[in-house]
Amino acid sequence: SSSTADLLAVPSGLAHRRIAGLVLFLIILLTVYAYDDLTSWFGQDPAFEFVLLFGLSFLGGTYLLSPDLDLEDSDPAKSWGIVQVIWRPYAKVFRHRGLSHTPVVGTLTRGLYLGCVIYGVGSVVQSLLGLGLRISVYDLDRLLTPQAGCVLAGLICADLVHLLADRFFSR
Image (cartoon, rainbow, N blue to C red; front, side, top):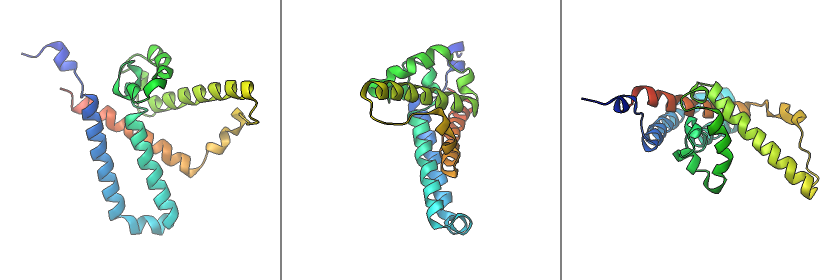
């Protein structure tokens, strides 16, 4: 008989990465198969650029910005190396499998959190070193581009694969 812990178990970090890798491979195959259609819609360079941005974001979402960053000792947290400490407050605020495991919303919480950390560190560095950098929240409208949409889509798809793996491939 299975214990309650076995029934609630989810795929390991390695299983998540393998499933995500398989999904990315299938996306690349479909892109190659439909390349002529894609280039007729977007033009040659944008199609390549969008697929590349999506693919890299999907990998980043899988390895670095996973929903499991809500666990202090997760594989994605360890992937950040010595700067993994930036994710400890996030893990304290978001309980595991809570809001951080909600499609789209979880992705946005990690993106906003990371943006705030970068903004905060950048502001401190700017004030200490006076590098002449302009760091302003008023520049956020520059993120509203098709390229940023591809990045967001890649991150969201990585999360969806993770969440589906949790749901359907639980041990």
